[in-house]
Length: 399
Image (cartoon, rainbow, N blue to C red; front, side):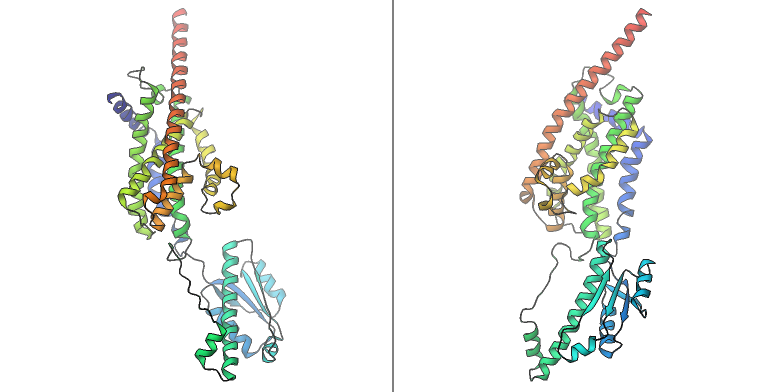
């Protein structure tokens, strides 16, 4: 235990003596979670600029335009005289959608025929496309329902009877686990978990690459006693990084979550129990990877590049069922995959630790796997460094 504690303290010295590591372990962790959610604070996209080309020029078409403009999804900002002007405004970025009302719109409605309107939306930006289509489609449905209810009332039905005939089944939509129905409450909590993983991996890789670059053996074994077994060194380093990042996780789930009103329905003790294997597995994976980097820049370039693929493999931005099975299986080697899945279930859905046993078990399995790999890699690295020092000493003696 004394050796492990000495390695623990030595690792703190390694961290606080490296400005790049301090920037990652403290600067990124403290400030990134505060500034990253700011663009998503409105939660949902509203009042997307829309152009309306009205060829009908009737009271009925103007009523439809007012109903569309009243929608929270879109805002009618332009009413050009023809489709060419609307197209020009679209390509200039003044509007992101165009609604076209045909010249026989009112005539078709009066004669009992189905009227048609056309909607053109920017499908290159999915959120904007969905917002424009939702705003126009929902407004058109309400407008159609109003016309049909008036026809039914004219045939002798009361208003309640007409509404029952028009909509025999009332649909009540309740968004579960995301009361705002917004993007921030959905994506930011998962990204913050990924941030914990990536900064820890990059930081350990940075320190390992720096040690290899400057031939500093203190990162790979304890200089005061070079006979310390590799597994004890790994345990000491894991305690150092794990205790540091447990404080960071506490900052996330107490300060950041409450500041931005993200859902936090998990019990504190169960949340700690789930975070424990997640942070340990990430630390052990980082220690394993740190033996592969020859310089400090390599970890930054490689691990930052992999952040986006890891984010998609976590299975929250793209349905898990749509990910190929072999790729899904491969993603289970990453702590972020079961970590994000379990934490999202616990924090947003209120799941208990027992209900995320599958994800929790995978994390403990990763801990065992990466502990063995880290111990083997550190043992080989220590032997290599000792052999290099022995060779240099022999050269000095022979010289």
